[in-house]
Length: 429
Image (cartoon, rainbow, N blue to C red; front, top):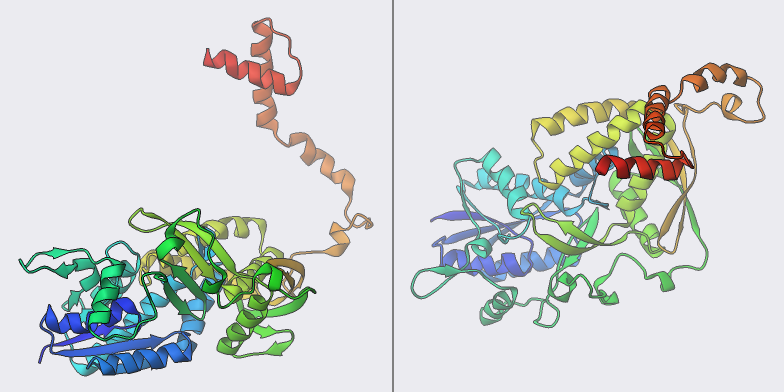
C-alpha cells in the first residue's frame, strides 16, 4: 500500500486532507502525526479521535520539553522577534517537521502531506525540513494544489469550500462560515487569523482571546515578579527554580492575567503579502523584555550594538524556518558566547498590558556605582576636558565650511536652524 505521513494538527485544513489523500491522490495508507508543542490537551485528543474516525493510522509525539529547551530558549537568547512580535508559530514548524520525518523513517513511508496553503509561510518552513532530511520523498499539499475539477484541472480551495467539503464528509469541525478564523497554538504563542480578522480596520472580538485578559478585566493592582537567568535562559520565577516547561506555563498564566502579550500587527509574509495578524504571547513578551534588560546590564556598548544586528538576522532566518542554515549557526556562535555573562535577576511590574523593568542585578554587571554616581569623587571629572574638546571634530570642521560658504554668498548667518535650511535651499538651487 502507498503510505503517506500527514503533518497533522487536527484542524480544518489537515482534516480535509485525510479523505483527499485517498480520493484524489491515491494513498491508501494515511499516517497522521500530531506533534504536541503545547496545544491544549483537548485539542490533542480531538486530533487523535478525528484522525482515527477518518481511517488514518495516528501518532501523537510529545515534544513540549524539547520545544522549550531547544527552540524557545534559543529565541530568548536571540531576543527573537519578527517585525515587533515574538516569533512563536515559526519556531515550532521545524520541530514538527523533524518529528514527522522521524516517524516516516520508522514506518517506511516515502511521502509527506501537509495542509499549508500557497499563500502562507508554513509551506516554506515545513518543506525546508522535509526536503533537507528526506530529499527523495514526495510532498503533497492539497490546499496549495487546489481542488480537483471534473475535467481534471484544479482550482484553489477557499476556506468556505473546505468547510462545505468537511461537512459533506461528516467531519466535526469548530469553524463555521460566520466564525471562520484559524487558530494556531503552542507554548510560546497563540495566533488567530482568518475571516474578518484579516481586515486591517476590524476590531477583534474579545472571544478570540484565551490567554490574555482585556485591559478592563485585569487586576486593579500591579503584579511584581522576578525572573532569574543563567547563561541567557530563564531558570527561576520569583526565587523558585523551575523546569523550563513549568516556568513558561506559569508565566503564561501570570502575564496573561495582567493583559500582557496581546499583539495586533500588520505583518509581511515571506511571499511579500502584507497581512493582519493577532497574537497572544504572554510568557514570550515578558521573558524577552527581561532578557534584554539583563543583557543591557552585562554587555559592553559594542557588544550590544553588534548583537542587535545579529538578533535581527537570527529572527529573519528563524521566521523563514531555516533552522539548519550556516549563517544561523554562525550567529548563534556569537550569541551563545555572549550569554556566558547573561546571568542574574530581573525585576518587572506587570500592569494592564504593560511591562516595566523595575530593577536588574548580576555579578557580571558592567556598572560601578562609585564611578557613575554624581555624589562620588572617585572619577576625576576634569580629565574629561581633553576628550570633550575633540568630540565631533570633523563635524565641527564641516560646519565651518558651510558657514564660510554662507558668508561668500553674502547671507546673514542667523540662527543654526535657519542657516541649515538656507544652505540646503542654495545647494538644491
